[in-house]
Image 1: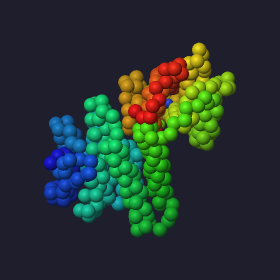
Image 2: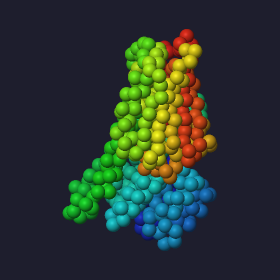
Image 3: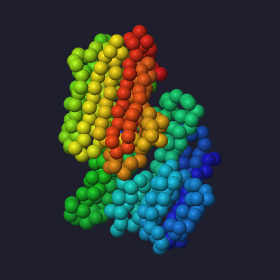
Image 4: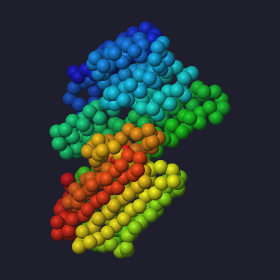
Length: 382
Ligand SMILES: Nc1ncnc2c1ncn2[C@@H]1O[C@H](COP(=O)(O)OP(=O)(O)OP(=O)(O)O)[C@@H](O)[C@H]1O
Ligand SMILES: [Mg+2]
């Protein structure tokens, strides 16, 4: 049996021993793991104790009370975010400070569990967070082993979809029980949070569909001479409402038509992802420019933006699944971290290359160079 360390940080001894008791013999199992998972509970009564314990031995999960005698839960959360970003944090909070919990989840906590909680509520939260832990763990492992991410990965992803669903259900139940009173105004923050979870779920599903299509190699690819400027134009149109919302201007710089042998769906996915990133990770009043050039039969597509940019240290992991770069300027931007990994798969199918130039605070340019048509290697999947 695999054992995960869980650090419980709460000044009430009753809560700490309660958690220990509930989770002592609790195990979870998943169809994709050979072994069951059990839990080892470590206790800390203050934030200071918690940080000391984490610096000695890093747990997988931290259950964190916000109201502590010395430094507060949010301070511990900040320490964890900065020093151990892989630890998953679940806030324990009383109903009275739910608003704070919502803020904490925005500040990087994975989820929160309101107290008092029943053993069943705690178990189901732990089951969720464990799934998430293994999803991330396994993706990292597959990458480090250089393995193709296939069916197993998709099984994990479907589990991943359950966690936002649970969150949505949780919020709806709180509203059903009128936990914040009778006035609808008291629930606005919940509603925002609900809509944002639903939105990220939708994006994840869209990404998943793209990914499974590309991965399976079963999708009928129709290679035809297409005018890529038309595909770019349609992607820009799709992104226009978001760009207007964010006060970002969009432009296309291309002498139409630019013909190339490609599948129009593939190109649509590629443009949608690059342009949506350029809009999402931009600044108010910024711009996005897409340009397409063909010289000596080589087509070069580039998407430049005046956005927040990417730190050079983060560039190598950009095209890995689930990469989301922490930046205070994009902390409210939702995404599943799959878009660029999908783009990379498409590019590999065409034998193309992608390079990124970026300066934090100035903007980024993603440039895709398609090779000569004779060099194309598109046969089914990866
Ligand atoms: N043009 C850009 N400017 C700044 N950062 C970017 C840009 N494009 C991507 N990033 C960073 O790279 C990360 C990965 O991008 P990717 O498109 O793979 O995922 P995402 O946008 O988070 O989610 P989605 O799956 O919805 O596309 C983003 O979260 C963002 O941090
Ligand atoms: Mg994206």
